[in-house]
Amino acid sequence: MKQMLYLMAARSITFECEWARIYQRLLPRLCTYDERMKDYRGKKRVLGRIAGQMTSMIYALLKTDQEPVSNIPSGQELPAPMLYDPEVHRKHREGHYRSLKPGTLTRKIIQLPKKT
Image (cartoon, rainbow, N blue to C red):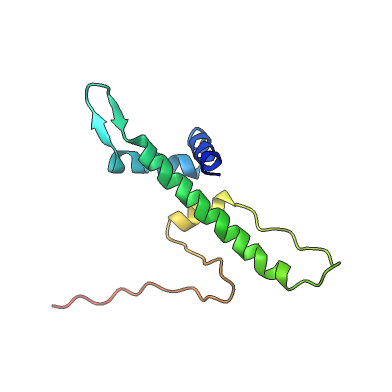
């Protein structure tokens, strides 16, 4: 399972997608730059981070689908599963967070006035 997640993460950073943008953003922060090789060292750490984020997203999608499926009586048709949406992922990264848990209210960020 670990090898499959590693391969998924390694393949996803080669495409033009959110995972590749996250990888490019984290590379300078988490890796050291080698002047001699003119490349970053320690890229597997970033790749592990991407694989971990993928794992948590897969878990959240499966957990979201588990609740409606558990309430359906046997023999009835199952609802369509929740699929990964790159647009939702992009909005989430920009700060428009929407919880996958049913019944949670959106929280507003309140900026307190500065003390003078």
